Length: 413
Image 1 (cartoon, rainbow, N blue to C red):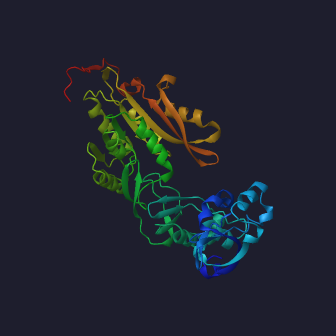
Image 2 (image 1 turned 45 degrees about the vertical axis):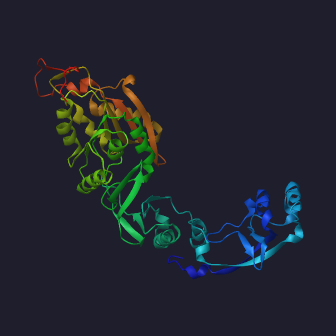
Image 3 (image 1 turned 120 degrees about the vertical axis):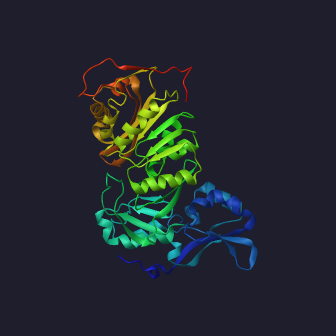
């Protein structure tokens, strides 16, 4: 079946059942609970017509055979409730499409061996699929079933192209429902509104977003280089009361980032629509030269390219000698091969910085998620070596650096 025919699910079936006194229903559950018939919009415990003092329990014919096949201790428990093999009978049920669960529908209509629908992500009222090739002939049927069966779902889309690394969005095809891509998601005590067709959002990163927020000290400073619609920036400002500088190159992401700052009523957030390297080199130095005492964190969540932007930190404060040293922690993401993920990640970062990272400078190296069987998304959190920041530009001649004394007692913030 490539087009959904709901009428095919209308049928009469016979299932085992048992009548029991209403007052004993609860007492019988230790025995019957695992055998109850579980179908959508069908109550397994029903009233007996014309008798308010009795109830009928509908049992799953696959799980329950006969009273005699029950364990002896279960038979004894039922006997104490005045139940025996003569208490059981068969009941005829009229079933329709709405009674069947998603998995049951797929098993019934998709060819054997193809009924395993790939996992999906839910983004507000939108279901996002990434169907494998063997399921594409059945894509519209799959989409319609999901709209029918999942409460609150209005739109089902399938990814039809790879993610654009520039703006981090991708082409999608509407399989069922409305072509309505503006949605809302709640995460980390914040509400995010955005056009899913124009920005990047991955619900599977919710746990990672939460990890980073918990790593940020109260009232610290966050530079979010690839902020998207704000899953790091907004809760950092709202929950951790951080001073936030949030940037994204995608004009749509920038629009919704500003909207989410407004929607969540957060203050102390400056937003930018710049290239990541430009953001680092233009926005960080003026702040760093104000003698900040708060811990500074930098998030760089663009796994396909983020490591390449680390060179923006080289010579960021060239010609300046810091006293005391600034506390800057960078959280950078990248895709790595499973077999050598951890060593590969560290090598990538050191190569981009043209500087080694000592073990004591590494905060943590986290395997965020599996992208595919052999591809992992990793995060390396590290304290950036001061020598990287103050390194003189290669084209400049060596000279005595200007000394910037960070006098903590007389600073004027």
